[in-house]
Amino acid sequence: MFTGIIEDQGMIASLEKENSNVQIGVRSAFTSELKIDQSVCHNGVCLTVVKKKGDIYFVTAIDETLKRSNLGDLNVGDLVNLERGMKVGDRLDGHIVQGHVDQTGVCSDVIELDGSWIYRFDFDPTLGNITIPKGSITVNGVSLTVVDSDNAGFSVAIIPYTYNNTNFKDIKTGTVVNLEFDVIGKYVARLNENA
Image 1 (cartoon, rainbow, N blue to C red):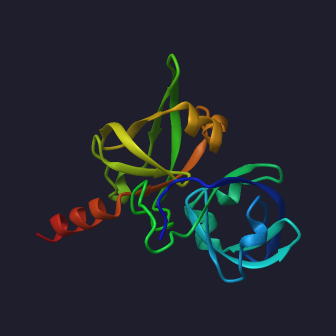
Image 2 (cartoon, rainbow, N blue to C red):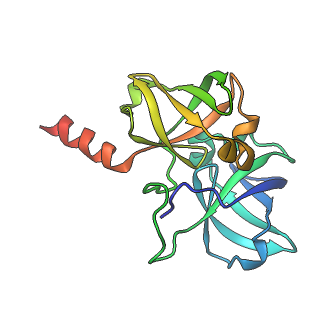
């Protein structure tokens, strides 16, 4: 379980194909604190630490993960948003994030305002995911509040801290991002389908 509050930006140090999987080496400031078999969220994707070497830890992304997320588009040197699992008793500063990407979206607009940014993301509405204004959304693992919403997209407002401390500064029109829709909203939508 995660909160969507990004702890660090990791740099992709290596990418090694293993059959249909990819082993990803990530250089992070908190590598020394990690344990083998620990979960870490990478751009919103929960992956398990399988080994460590110096300041680099390694995770494996299976074919399903690569198809459903933007991890298959990573290159050595790219930055990914990182968050370790929530500790019991910690504050829930973001929202409930599972680390299970529902689908990808594409940035369709970035508007720079005087001290903040508005990002618009479009997604395939046929997959049944929804957003609502003032609801929660996770973009590349970042817990955000939806500003505007329609059936095929939404916008979010980004403050300077988030812009400077996540990979939002690298997102431009056409960038593919990972989306995890609000878990409570997903259950409500499923209940309405069955009503």
